[in-house]
Amino acid sequence: MFFILSLKKNLKLTPEYLGKRINKHLANLLNSAVEGSFDTKFGYIVKVLKHEKIGEGKVQDSSGDVLFPLLYKALVFMPYKGEVVDAMVSQVMEVGFTATLGPMSMFVAAQNIAADYYLEPEARPHPRWVNKTDPSKTIQVGGDVRLRIMSVRVNGNEMMGVCEMSEAYLGPITV
Amino acid sequence: MEDRLGPEFANAMFLSISEVKTLLEYFKREGYMSASNNPLFEQIFAYVKRYDRFPDIQVSDQAKNMLQEHHFQDAEIAMLMNLCPHSAEEARSLIPELNRIESDEELNATLEELVRLKNL
Image (cartoon, rainbow over all chains, first blue to last red; front, side, top):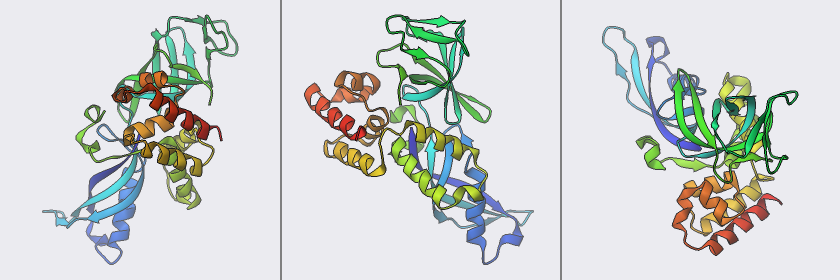
């Protein structure tokens, strides 16, 4: 899900920037510090939308650097447990398949694929999962699928979703 | 669903894929990308372009207004617009929050209108 969140960030300025253009400088610094970043609590910060407030700076002992608290609004992408999402199939294997959702990789294990799908390992150019009753329904590389997120794992600077595709109304979709 | 997200999300605003697409297109037009090095922006932009269900922003605004008039909550509106379910049963299965709505008929009528807008 996408959200607009109010967030806070402390930024440290070295003394040479304490001039007339300080606000502009802080704004640029904020954008480059947070845009494109990932936080386990807020998810992916896609874009800063608005600088709301620059708080009072505090001079740091010993260095002369000044720490400013900044309040801002940002567009964030944060997947959560139980959410139903659409994603693009990226790899099909015997143990299941993976799909891509923006910056995230989603994994669906074979046991979490509805029982009426079977693997066609010899299919070309890639193996695929095919529905027994309706063979037009396939999970293949480049196709779109609807999944439910079972859990989200954080791995360094990335998030990985573990998903299922076993309930009704989940599975291949056309977009 | 707020309990599945942190307290930071208590006052968060929900955006549908369609709205995110409009927002990112605006930043693209304003030349934002030429000045930044943000691969996440491109990944999200590609995602929302692929999965936006509505033909343009006017229609997606119309869908949002219609859902607001029917008193859906913000989270439900974003999810309905993202997933565009065709029936009450499908909607309840994908978005369990909708089980608070008792009448299938009422829900079906709303979904029919949503699908009509999507297919414009």
